[in-house]
Length: 113
Length: 113
Image (cartoon, rainbow over all chains, first blue to last red; front, side, top):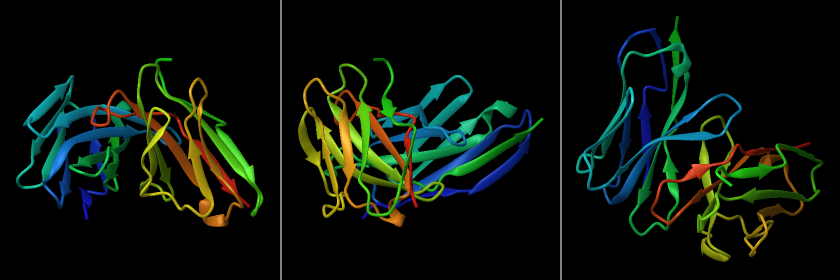
């Protein structure tokens, strides 16, 4: 059974810092991995999708990497801003699991001005 | 539309009452997924559709939960005889194909009293 873990559960950093959020999964048989952002009381905003054949994806100040064999992904946020404060979730789509996503517990990020 | 739409935003029901939630996927997307967020960051997959056909229902508590996606109508998730533990935010997501990026709606917060 696929399990997804995110570390740390919470992170507080001063504005301007570069930071890394970690995601690990137990079954390396995945089609893709998706990073989301969730603001309090809101829905999920898709940030990046990495296919299993890819090593990384970039969007603006965000860079996500994938090491499928070791079951790990990282989300790198450069030059963090207070507006980046949110909960970040990673989710994997497993092979032969239909299209459903298995979510981690999330990392709650707070960027202090 | 360009976004996944969910109605209502909030729903309050007494224990034992019926609840019905609606989702309009992004135009042109063939797949619809329903997820339940019970605790702060705990997402549980419920059911998915490929057009009007059930694709994967492995997460559905079949006794009281049912769902439909009919042509030219919003998809729906219905809970008969709600229980306190059904209190959660229910998210709908859609994708072009089963393996593509999933886009989430804003969610429906169900409170069972």
